[in-house]
Length: 116
Image (cartoon, rainbow, N blue to C red; front, side):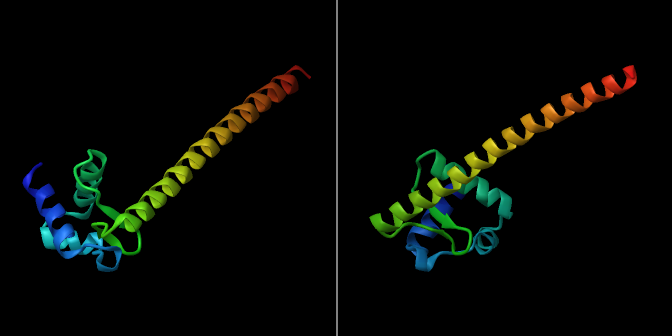
């Protein structure tokens, strides 16, 4: 763990424990003197690498889960986000296949029109 990861974990665990005590990523980035994108990437790495169970919501911000109930709620929110991304991926694939089929069909029509 590097220094900034330790600062983030410590700040959330000691001052922002529980969803009701969440801090927005903008405020946390400002307090730490880093940009917001860097903060989001670092928090993502902390969680992804199993270093700390940090949680966050788009409206409340980042927090350290206060209990199992908050942890479970965070897990459900992550599942919901993952499903939305998966649905988007599937929809994009369907749209691309449809686009390619229409493009091929238009090409065939153009070829037939040239022969007439």
